[in-house]
Length: 264
Image (spheres, rainbow, N blue to C red):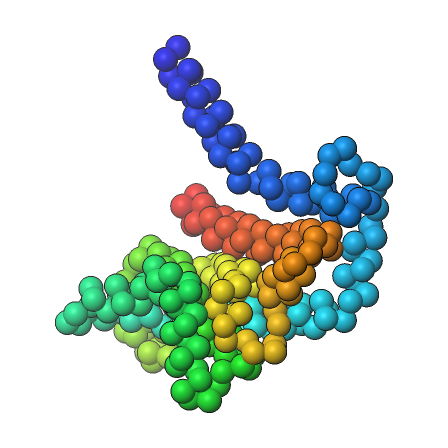
């Protein structure tokens, strides 16, 4: 009886947490389909007017193109860096390995405003500030630790003798990497690509500092909400949320699904 009561309490608690997190997003979706300009209740009539407006807005489309380029490029670069870092941790033992890993995992712990100012100063010094590559490089620094953590977790589930067996069978280090390490890490690599793309697509603070005139979707949202109430921001926000959630859920399904399959 006590266990059942505890399960009910935990279920209600988790439900309240989800309601607290997702209620604002749900309201944003509802108001994006509301004919009234101001987000008030009672609601007006159902409409797709705000979606039509952003569909016909060239600035929004340019921001979407920039965000897609930045997030996809960031995903590839950050995942490559994360894989290299995770493999060096798996394959080699060296002095100061602990501080090395701690330093790699440091960027997500730094306040974004500090990270943004530091990236702006560094990129300005080397003449790369104000370009799409500026955002890609900054986002790669920010997201590579997430890719490394995912791939490192996958690698530590692997028998270290598998790589040595490939060498003993005549394979070179590159052949062992291609035919043993990469296939084993493939689910984590795909998950890391999805996760880093989602983080990059959503990121605002660093993008705003280093982007110059190259606006991404979060920057356009800020410009829309500054000084006025525009219901199109709800439509854009819904698009961003659905894109990010799709990538995150896809990353989880691929990674967890592969783990379950490997243990069955």
